[in-house]
Length: 371
Image 1: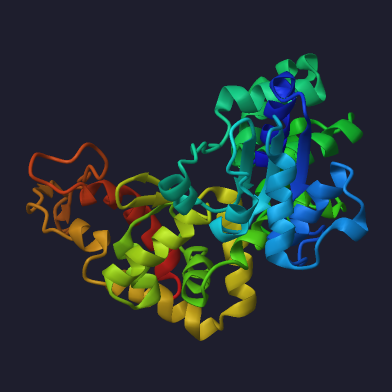
Image 2: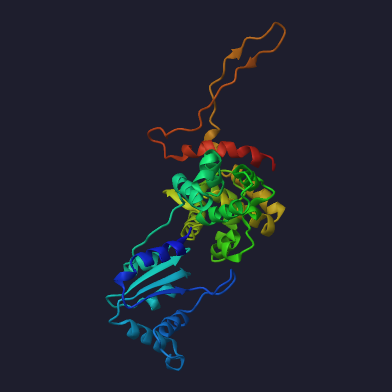
C-alpha cells in the first residue's frame, strides 16, 4: 500500500521540527524470508547513528535499551520504525520522553499501541480512480494517458489501484512505449498469466513477496481460510461464506476473518462485510492450488453452497407461478421468463444479508461446475 513511502515522505515534510535528527530504522532485515529485528538490535542502530562507539553499546538487552532512552532524552528526534511485526517489537523502542516522535508502519493493525500507548492510527486505503489516473500520468506522461484515458482507468482497476502494482505496470509500459496500454490490460486480465505479469524481476517490487510477508504471519487456520477465499468468485465475503468454505461454525469464521483484516488481507467495509481486492484474490488462488488438494478445494466449494446460513439459500425463495406464454396449436405451453431483482437496498426489517444475494447468485455458475 506504499506505507513506507508515505511515512518517509511525511517525515521529510516535518523534518525541521526535529532539529536533533531524523532516523529511519527498518525492523526487518532485507529479503522476503528474512527474520524481524529484535528491539535491542534496532536500538543499537540508533545508538550508532548518534555516534556511540560499538564497544560502549551494552550487550545486555535491558542495558542497551536503557542507554537508547538516555541518548534520546532531551533531544527532539523523529524516528521511523518501518515494517513492525507487532506491538511487542515496538514498545521497547518508544523513547517515553517529550520531544521525540515515533512513526511506526506495519502490515497489521497495532491495536495494542493505540489502546495502551495512545498511538494515533492512520490507515492507507487503496487509491481512488482519480488518484490512480494521476499516478499513471506522472509515470507515463499526461499525453499518453489522455490518449488512452478509458484504458488507463481500466489499468488502474485491474491493478486493484494498489500503488506497488501500478508502479510495476507503469514501469513496464514506460520501458515499452510502443505498446498500447490496452495490451498491458489484456496481459493482466489473462488468467494464465496472473501475477506473473507483475513480476518485474526485482525482489523489492515483487507483489507476491509483499503479500507473502503478511500471509506468513497468519495462524494456520487463518492461512487456510485466506487460501480458500481464492475459490470464491465474488469479492464480498461474510462470516457465513467463510464458514461454508471452512466447514466450521460462523463464530469461528468471524474470528478468522478478523485476523485476516488485521493483516490487511481483507478489508471490512461494514460490520460483518469483508472484501478482498483482485490481486489478493489471485494470490490466494495461487496458494490454494499449491497447498490444498483437489479434494479439499472441491469439498470447500460444496460446503459453501450447502452451508445453511449462506446467502444463496436466501435467494431460493419460491417465485410466483408465471403465466404461460401463448403457443402455437399442438405445442406445449412454455412459462414466460421472469426477472428476479437480486440487487437493491434491504427492505425494512431485513438484516442486510440479502445484499449478498446478487454476488452469490452470480457465483453459483463457476461453483456448480465443481459438482
